[in-house]
Image 1 (spheres, one colour):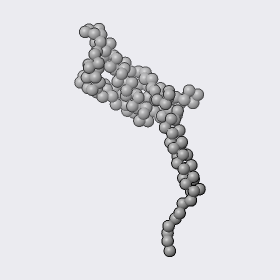
Image 2 (cartoon, one colour):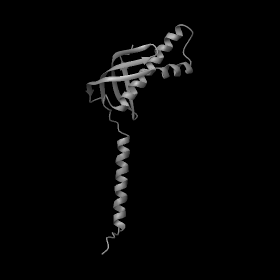
Image 3 (cartoon, helix red, strand yellow):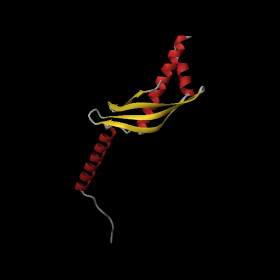
Image 4 (cartoon, rainbow, N blue to C red):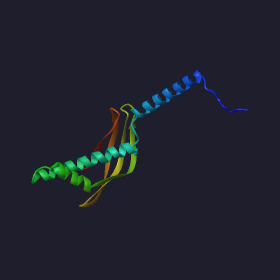
Length: 139
């Protein structure tokens, strides 16, 4: 007795259709316009990146009062010496009409000058498939 199974032409078509459906679903899920939650990795990464840019712009503004704006090398040096941690993340509200979340968190900045924590709020949305945040309270 043989346990050999033979697949016919219709089985190959079924398998091909199944593979196409799986690829289509994977494509749609990767292009999702759904806004990630306040504590999602993509959201937290966007908050950290925007907070870092705001802080570097503030440092550059202070530098422009003295010797001039920061050079790209100085910006990289400051960026490398600072860390931004987003903690105590909470969702404040959801706007279904505009598809955005309003969130609150504690932002902790560590640098050579010490450690500073501050409460911030941020609004998270998705534009062209990219998570975008708008931070307020970072002074």
